[in-house]
Image (cartoon, rainbow, N blue to C red; front, side):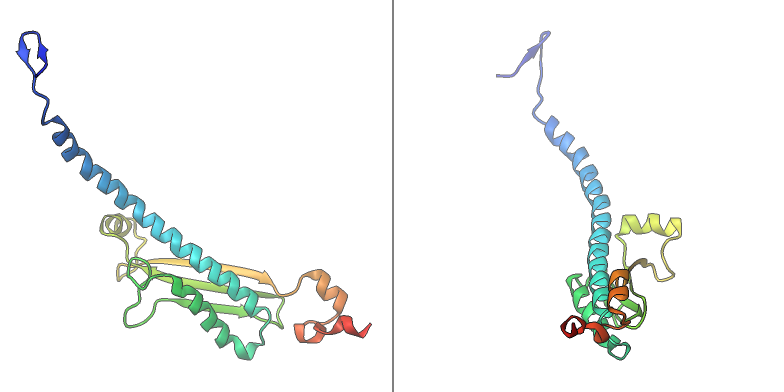
Length: 172
């Protein structure tokens, strides 16, 4: 039985469909707007963890073996899917891994740079803001730096490289 309002029959059977037709596109656009920051955050988390691990490895490696440290970092970056939304992995890989320092230096640093293709709606806004490069990619960069040896270790053992102090405590 239909409700009766001031002598007129009221029929509300299609109202939910009209509201859903208006609300669904707005919800989809909001989800799309939240997806791009989530992708960038995921990339930065993986890149930052790989750079920190690379710093620790680089701090204990001789300069001649830095290429194996770079390969180690690239293996860690394999957690990022090779999709253009996460990482441009076309004819040339867009991972740029730069290393500074090593076991003989006072600090070790790893810088990782990545390029991603923004989603269409975000890409238009990013292009208007001028943050995209000439190919339409957004560049993300992360740098991690660590001391090769803490001050207390360098003072107490008197050697610069780990190879000089590895067995120092056995000679007492």
